[in-house]
Picture 1 (cartoon, rainbow, N blue to C red):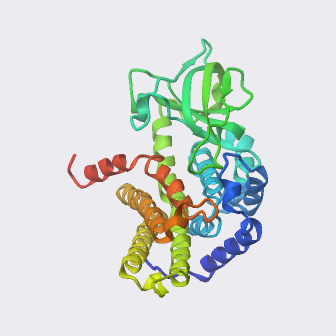
Picture 2: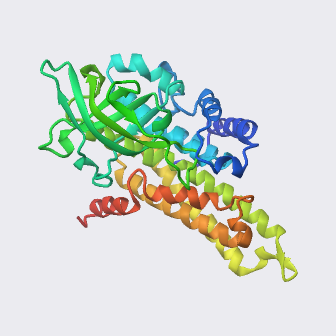
Length: 384
């Protein structure tokens, strides 16, 4: 694996830096502390290409490979403080648009894919339920075919659905065979205005505040059979693949955010003086900053290894779990250390250094909890 960046990759990074600084450089911490979705920011990011980075150009995307997609997302995380916006874009791209690209019929691709890749339509991935989180395939939502087989009737409830309040489309996972777990799940693409589909109001959050999320309710929701993604019983496999993409690429944003916070800590530790010298001269502070640097670089190495493996077509589920676990846990610890370094200002809303911690805490939960990643790793190394 060559860790040096090509001239083309460097150009990608520079383009994100210029775009982000010009478009989002004026965003302040106060403006992203409320749970309000900013449609203007979404559209600007979509026009730049952040809703279809790996999608082929023929479908309106940028056609980037996995590693280049990671580099773009990482740089966005470094240069834009609104992690809620980044998370919303990535959830749309990796958990919804990629599955349509990989598994959709020509009919579904022609109908939706270009508009999704260009961010003209917003998508939400709906699988989590009140009674099935980590045990995701024990869902209670059902999809029963009509007598003629031309429709399915979906009934159930989904919760914590990212982008739901603003979504035009939903990828909804439901049981088409309740006697099976993994093989009993199917996936449907449902338009927001479909009768029987109801979306709750936006739910408030402390972290990733600008990412909208809500519950959805399905009450005899009548979905045409041609809105089935893949085939009957392949929904679990589709979801599993989408999580590989999300765990791989979305977490690049946290690597970028860790680098941004590291730089803030270095500058502050040089400028802030106590006992007549910069606090960075004190080992208690410098050791914390060194630890942040080590966590950043090891996270980046794991991330890039996963991207390289994916582009080489190599199996990498173990390394994806290692990367997701390591990055999410390190982002939380980096957030804690940054607050400690900044002292009283670390919990000041005006300074906003606590945003990494608030935005990173959910990273240990979504896309498979840290404990689930440990279970996957244990299985791969022969402990299960």
